[in-house]
Length: 590
Image (cartoon, rainbow, N blue to C red; front, top):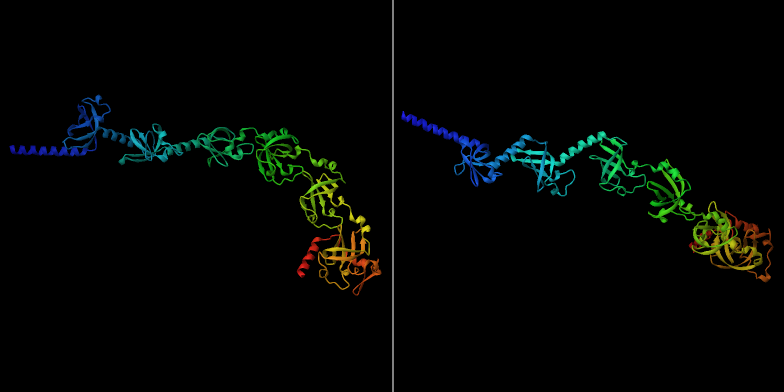
């Protein structure tokens, strides 16, 4: 009997020991309730029930002096039995675990949490959320780039919980996503309330080349460059500055695309509404050149009002090719209003109208017949321009350059910059034209031609040009004579250049003088006889026949044929181009 009782007692102890071991294993890493048994200077003895007693370091309590025996405290069992045989426990670890478990129960991914920024760490900020630490990446601090994260330390914000890992006690937050969602909601609500035509206050958020983005308390609107001012705007930064507060007009709201068009000039009166009364035609004004284009200059009369001065309205006398040749941006100029187009918002201005038109009195200053002096300024194919005064030119036509020569191009007689005297032939002020004559300022050599030359006279000269029908001989004093091909030699001459050369000195007899036609006919065939014994043959007189080879023709007819045969009409110094061609051909023949 005694033996049996002893056996039962041993079995009971063995079961109790097994039960205690199992209990000890199940409470490890769990939070249990403990009771303070004794408060010592550096530690506190805590009874955790049947599991035994453990000690807590005094620094695990916020105020050790407030702890007294009998107080209840939550502890985390780290080990059910340490090396000293007592359980290892921690109040701080229990408090931390309780906080984390509360956070895990309260929040999930996507939740909005409130937290305080505690410190800056590598890659972001640490946030205190309900007593536990969460991480805020630097890219998630704000919707705009953050240059100094330290500015956020100590401040409380709302965040979106974007990642939660309970096993690792890891919480990642985003303030940026939270703000973006708030802004999106705010934009949606604002879009629903905005109406075209209403006025709103906004802040300049961004300036581009084409316009300005204005923040309307959460939603951006575009203020296009054309809606900044009634006047010309080169760049939006000339009108507004970053962060400037503006009162704008809602022009259009596109709710589907979330786009808002704004206007600044529409908040002010349109100066073009009263433009005709303010700037009547012929009004003289002063303005500033604000833009130059090849065809003219834009002059600002007041902010928002500009007029165009076309290059043709710059000067009465000068031909202006480009506006920049006369003006530069920023110049202040006097102008006269020429026309106003309110519908198209255009004002035509003139600068020359502020001065007297010199062409109005040109007929008084240069009456017909007046001798004038000037300098050759320019050439055209048909004449030369002689500058009479600044901006006033007269034109000398090639037909009025010489009494004796047919001038094909003015450069045959004149040079640019040459000073000379001419006579006013005609004044056309309406068309701004003055016709001048150069030959009229000189004596006409043909007036005295009969006193210097007679038919039958032997005369020397130099071949000046060659033509297919004959050669021109310079007799001096600007007078040329023509040797018809039939009068070059007794022998038949096929080509003029075979018998004569330009520059060759010849001696000939005058066989015909036509004063009114300004023509002299010469013959080389009759220069062999000396003057004392010379008698004009009958065949050279009037309409008598002239024997040329086997053909009998009238001398007058022969010269007429030379003067106007085959379209080669001749007058003194006729057709320089043709003569040059003949000369070139002669050189090639050589």
